[in-house]
Length: 294
Image 1 (cartoon, rainbow, N blue to C red):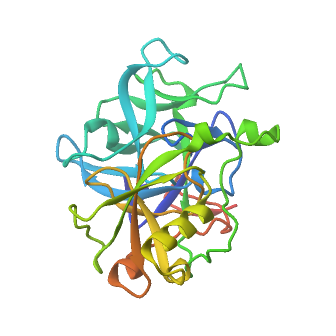
Image 2: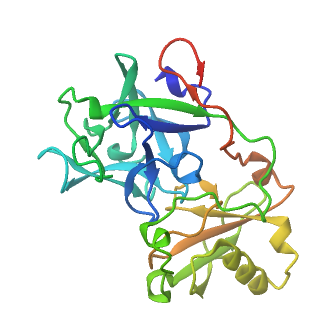
């Protein structure tokens, strides 16, 4: 677990499928392998927590604010004893065992084990088009081995005009736009307190017919009655009552599920506490006692 000490963000790179990273898929629910290293979807925020036995574990939070979770649902790919690995809301405290992860050194890499005892596993060794990531019992497969890259913290807050460095969808690659029925959803929103806490009785709702981040910003500014708030606030997503607030740096996930948005004012303690990954930093892999820049 030393690999996570003092680390804010990580990428997990599959050793057996070089160049493929664990990614929060664009539906906001599933996870997959992606070769798009320079996007927010392959970066996971690290939160330390106690495991089911009291030992050290971490929560891994993705670009949509949800947490990497090994479920109990049988997976359709991989070993017969494998289960689905998803992005889940943190709706209870303490977190469920499937959201708690430990990194265990194996050879020159790591295996990543959940609190349920299953290990994070890539798929597609032979069928290379398969991108699924599941969790399964330990069978010593190299598909369970991961390089863990430390992603440094960015020194400045992103500008609202910065591109949304996000995972490209197959539909986008075919240049077919998403339809309104695929992205229309209810948005719950609230102004966060200066310390980042939320008044649970102050949530308001609106309907949004796009997943575009800038349109969400403008719609909320109109609702709040001050367009200047677009440049003086940070939109954060909160996945579950006990979820950490996550700066929203990508478009909303594709789907119709309700999204909770917490609006944080610039200059507040909550704003000062937010951290952002530096996507352009050189690759840092901590697979031994030394740090290698590649």
